Structures are given as C-alpha cells and as structure tokens.
Image (cartoon, rainbow, N blue to C red; front, side, top):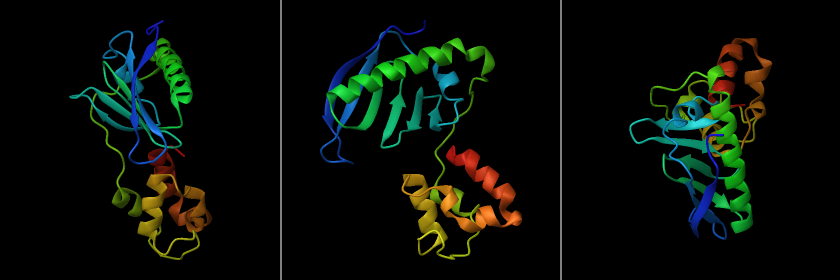
Length: 173
C-alpha cells in the first residue's frame, strides 16, 4: 500500500458553484512517486511535472493532486468530501500497485481548449446537436454540458471516423 490516508484539512466555499465546497486534503505520504503514473491515466486533463500537479475532470468540478495536498471542487458537503478523499486514496493505491502496466508520464499535458476540439468537429454549424455553432458545441463538450454523440455528423459520416476517434481519446469518451 502506497498511501494510508488522505486527511481532510480544510473546506472553503466553491465560487464556481454556490452552495458547494472545495475540499483540501493532506496525504499521509508525499505523492511525488505516484504522480507520473496518475498522469498517464486517460481522465487526466492537465499534468505539470515541474509543479508536480495532476488535474482530473470530475462529473462536476475538478480534482487536482499535488505531492503534499489535494483539492476537490464542487463537493456537496463534508461527508461527500470525506468519501471522495477515501475513494481517491484507494485509486492512488490501485494505480501504484498497477504501475508495472502503466507508462509513467514524463512530459506536460494540458487540457484541450475549445479550438482543439473545434478543428476536429465537422465545422458545418448544422445545429443537429442543439447548439447554434460547432464552436459553441466544442465549448460545451469541454464544460461537460454536451456529449460527443450529440454531434450526429461525426458518427454518421465515414469521412469523420478518424476525427471522432481522436475526439473520443481527447475527451475520454
């Protein structure tokens, strides 16, 4: 076992989602060794090896892990925060135990930007997804307010198969 616990050290109001909190936790051991393995997981949206930070997108909010602390945004309450910290501890331990099957990340990764997504979309502004433009759809994909299958042309037209595969990998779909 790599990590015994992640202790809840602080909660602060979440400015992005009024009524929710940001949970700060302190791992029982520094996470330097496991961060490159965590950064190799598909749900990572950013990795900065210089700062020692890995960020994941959650269904709502984000989870950022540093060597000596973790932050989880848009948490309902302290009880949920404690559950999330315990689940994170288990995930870190599972990643560490499975590290032989992973390739540790060595370089920085950044979250895709709206234009990164847009250039892979059909760029037809067909409105089949419910958005007025493909760039609006790209922004809402990154915010988690839309899902890639809502873009009908990218699944319907064979010409977009390679782009779809790239988007699915990029978005963790």
